[in-house]
Length: 479
Image (cartoon, rainbow, N blue to C red; front, top):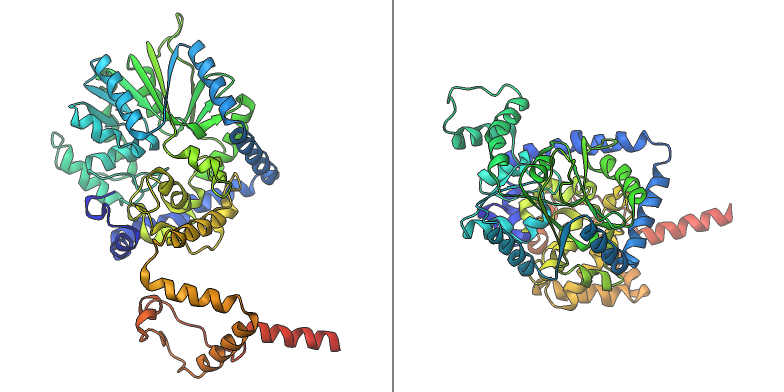
């Protein structure tokens, strides 16, 4: 989240971001990039829907027996030499990690990409305690040196154009030749590699996230395309995994089944370049690996999500970002508008659970409810249903704007009375047909101005859908 948009709320943030031409240019690449690649990857699999059904069943089964699998994981991780720390809140996770850093006299840390560490604002905490934590994922590294936060859970720097990235490197890598050229994206990658490489060998601790925690093995799994996660957990003497309770999977076959839908949904790959399992500390004959291993497992509101039937399905999420990539609201506003590390449709549900609905009262309305997110979700999360539930909660807690309540109450009164609804809609259809046939013809009405300034109201057919349908049914029966 950039400093300019922090804590302003989605509505104000999006009003600013939608006017950002550079952001619009960067976000336009989603259509021809991740969305198209996912479509090709999914269509290339004959039994994709079977894979999706199995993935959904695995995630649902795990959530229904989460306590069993968490206990199994902790026992098996301990057998591998790892110390497991269960943390109920973000502050507990922060204090646990800070205590470990002090225990091992850590002043330099290298990090693989981890959205949970973004969730608990770990980097800020470490900096306040004079501990340098360097992001080693290219996108994360780029937003870190720009003093921003990720705008996407998969592609943290998706909001940054290549030209902006080049300018950022010139500004921060001051020891390099100022006249160097960046003729291709590979030049950025090579420069970042050279800047980051030495930090792996100087770090006392490596921190990574986890895509999955395998209960039967006591192992954590990371899925990357850069290999930085491997270096972060293999070279430093201490490895800390930071994950959440919903990342548990029962066993290896289940994990492999989820990988088959994860790669295709996330980046359009059959499999990511690196899929790495970590099982505790370095063994006697291992060529590399940490001498000490700790695993932080965070709750931070997820149990509350699980206890509610309406929201429990959200914990099936495997963080593939397909719903984000296909969301028209996200593509227009960018990730920083959400005031949260979790963005798009999944962020609308997750973010309030991690803080409060009051903090994110705008988010339930950051959706067109088009349903595309539901169609592309590899674990069949009913996102539009969950978003509607969040809207109901916002209204029930009187968090929605005061100006909207009379209209909603009036609509509820009318909608519950079919005869009255038909009468009013028929009158509206008739009078709307009398309006001039021109663009933005409703934009002069005060409370409709913002909506219709960029949209054109279709010409009315003078009749409602119900009346047209009634005529159709009558003509059908007579014929």
